[in-house]
Image (cartoon, helix red, strand yellow):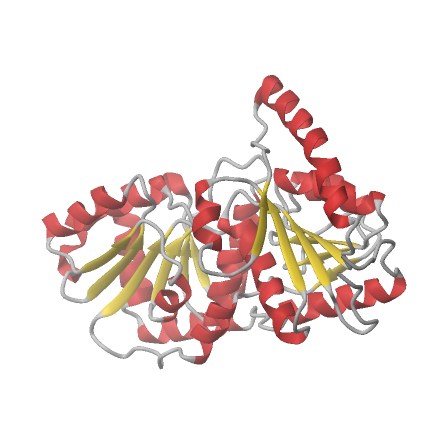
Length: 375
């Protein structure tokens, strides 16, 4: 292995995981790096959660599963500390083989890798997908060379450098944008329900309860529903019993194409989901996950509502009545639907991956790799 050229990137390390929302921005950067810097290496140090196996399936990316679980409670934090202490030397040995930059994707799994990178003097770029900075990124910000943010309103007090780049988009999202159909004028509208890479039980239950109350629209709506493993069969049966036309998935890697075919998205408000909604120009009904201490999904959703491209419904108020009202006020109101589409596209940053790679190249030139040898 040899060091990359001064004007390019040779090897990129990614740290984080736990959900598709954390991983997809890193995957986007790795895919774009392979296009810009042929032969470059990208390695993902991640957790071993089942959802991550699905996210990486068929992508041809190098991954290193770490034995790190989510901390919870005193015993959980003790276990997490021991797991990080065990993982850090292994990661450091791998990084010492010659990496140009380390990316922190957020979440508990990113901590030991970012610490290892800083010990070796490798530039660190943290990716923050949300309007409110996550706990681990707040902790690591003073150690980072730069923090790449998705929202103009994100505030990070102790970062040496903060830049708004937008959230990187996967290749399949860019392809979906290029292949997107014209705005629908048909009588049948497509509604996509998605709770993230693992589904969302509360949204699933609300839609299931609402289906019998929405029968006046049965001939005018086609549902696409990503329900998660636990709820797929129940949702499939709910649509069947009430006579709706629906395409139900537990998980699908084809979500960007399905999103591009939709007239309205009903889902959570994670930063990665919102960046994809924006670039695809899809009006949305956002139901923020209510149990995060920092309420970052609520802050994300509020930014999209201020733009005019989204409607916000608190999970406690997600009922058949509220869904019925949104369908009448938005889905079957062509002028409002088109106005929302234009508003949401104004927030899109389709070149985010390139902006972050440009930043990484700059940091590499300022800080040549401390370790680079042939193998």
